[in-house]
Picture 1 (cartoon, one colour):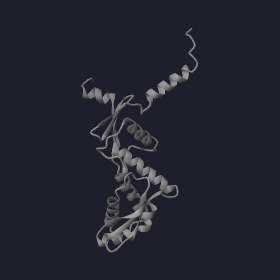
Picture 2: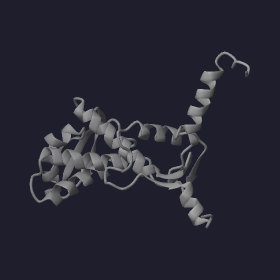
Picture 3: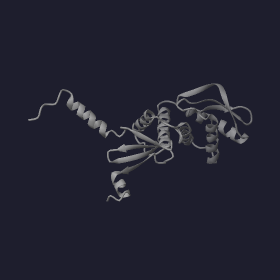
Picture 4: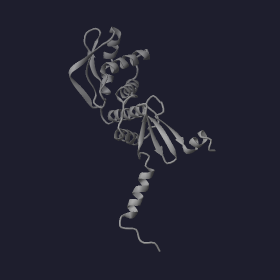
Length: 213
């Protein structure tokens, strides 16, 4: 008969086993400051850091919207964006719908939009780029779109512009945090534009590549 395990050894063993099976156990490798590589029990996967962060940001903005409203970061001094006269009228004419997604703006003169606030969750927001995206979305529809259509596409663009980009260097802790937030989502397999966030390779794939089977 073997000796009894020391007190706590069973739970320690379970913890070790759990850690070994944890999809987020490091180390991680960042390739070309764009792709994250991590080992899995049956192979490895490559994650597109921008696509994953874009999905995370989009889902959080959408959750805020459904939960009662998106928190807004107001500007002490409005940011002015120059557009064509037609674009200015188009954007300002949809100010009410845009306010629902945290973009607070109004017309200032014939060809200027004054932006008073953007969603607080956006990281280092590119205000001019965001407004130009909005103008392009509205102009492309050719008609007055439903508020829901505006909301969805504007959130897509906002999430894209405020996410970790290809070329950004991430520490191992930042990589782990990004992956943990992705895992907490109901689905983190694609970005809001339906591009894949990850590609998995099994041990069988590797064995075939190296002619081991």
